[in-house]
Image 1: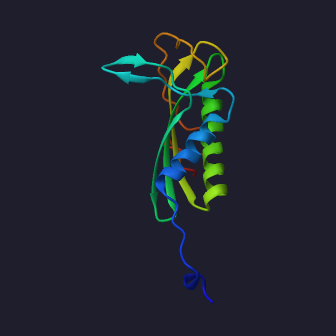
Image 2: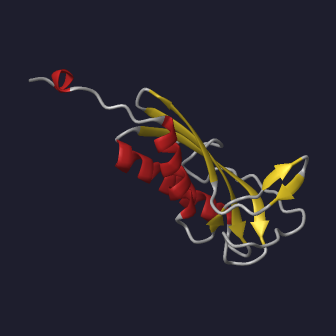
Image 3: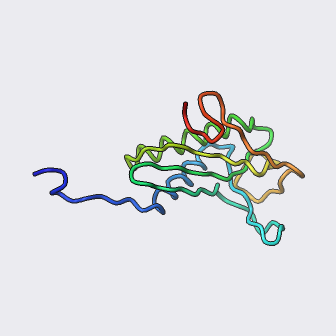
Length: 139
C-alpha cells in the first residue's frame, strides 16, 4: 500500500495560526497588543497576534506583539521568530519560509500580558538579526 492509498492530511490555516500565536507568547518578555478602534486603544492584548499563509507545505507568518521594558527588543523578536518557526515545523511537518515580527508596543513593566499602559510613543518595527533578511527569511 502506498502513502497515497492511505489518504491525505490537511492542516487548516487556522490551526497553524493558533500554533504561531501560542509559540509567540512563550518567551516571557513577549506579549500581546491592544486592539484599536479609530486610533484609540480598546482593552489590552493578552497574546501576540499571528497571521499565517499556507501554500502547499510552505508557511509564511507575521506576528504582531509587545515587548516588556527594559527587555532587549531585537533579542526578544529573534526568540519569538525562532520559536514560531520551530513549533510550526515540529507540530505540523510544514516548512516555515518566513516569520515577520512587528513589535508595535513597548510595555511599561516586565510582566507582559497583564493590564498595563504602554510606554508613550514606543512603536518599533524590528529588523531581522544576522542570518536572516529583513523579512525573517533565512539566508
